[in-house]
Length: 397
Ligand SMILES: [Zn+2]
Image 1: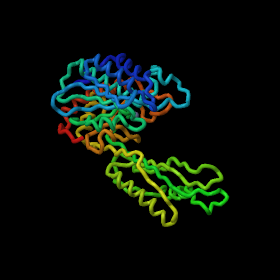
Image 2: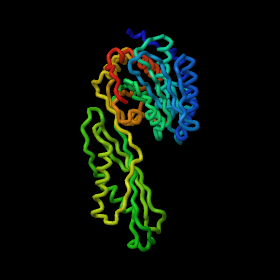
Image 3: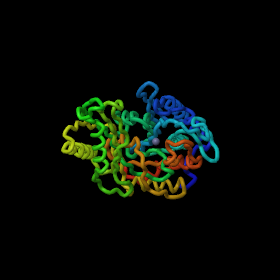
């Protein structure tokens, strides 16, 4: 396939869908993804793609768009419909205006990740219009609630949305680099329970805040054993919130803290939980009145595809066609819907999308228009490369 044989939509049509997406406010909370799902379903049907809006709650929906293929495993494209809020700082351009200026498309979600989603849709529409026949279907899963609880991905996973899938590509912003791995997330809540007393007679109470302070010290020094990973940084553990006490003259009987743990492939989250529980339990030796509870708030496993996997070879080949060069392979610091969609399964997965991941969740979020165009070319070139080069055996989801 020569450089110019990649099916594309005119840039104006790609921009128009991306701009409309930015103008539909899907800040989460509350999300309101249904608005965007309905618009995109209509857009996709106008391009003769199959589209299904999948409601999950009032005002909230996932979306599935399909370009039919033959019997081979499907190539699954994925992006989220929601964004974070615009924040308190004034923007140079209206965060919901979908404005273009200085070579960029500006707005909340331009990079994370309505831009990437628009590029995937444009690629599917272009392949459809070019009547390209593929060995397998391309299925786009657009999810609700990625930025908060990943309810959309959880629903799709429970519905078996990845059955028959061979590969998963997520359009999170990677600056058009190839990202085959990200760390997992394990969020824990620690509660300490004490006994209230008058603040003038602390010896009659048990101070839950002091107990938490001791636990915080212990946890700050906790080491989590993990295998080294060629791309990812080591695991981290950070105690990031703490609340306790009612008022200045009462010995606090309650304290709550939350721990943000980031894990790497090869770490079992149940084992990590046990390591934390054991470390807290050991503190009973020095704090005989310690009473604590530990519970999981969020459990998202890491995602890992080997850098020499056939999917990566296919992606490099597609990138050479679409971008004219072979992008670097690297890791990113954030977690994605892939953790929840895969539910611990081993589907080959790649993150690739336009926009700078460091601009995600910031004010003045924007994406270079030329990288939107380049991403759409990549997503249109990838199916050919995947079905030519990659392992066709479907993995169990
Ligand atoms: Zn995102």
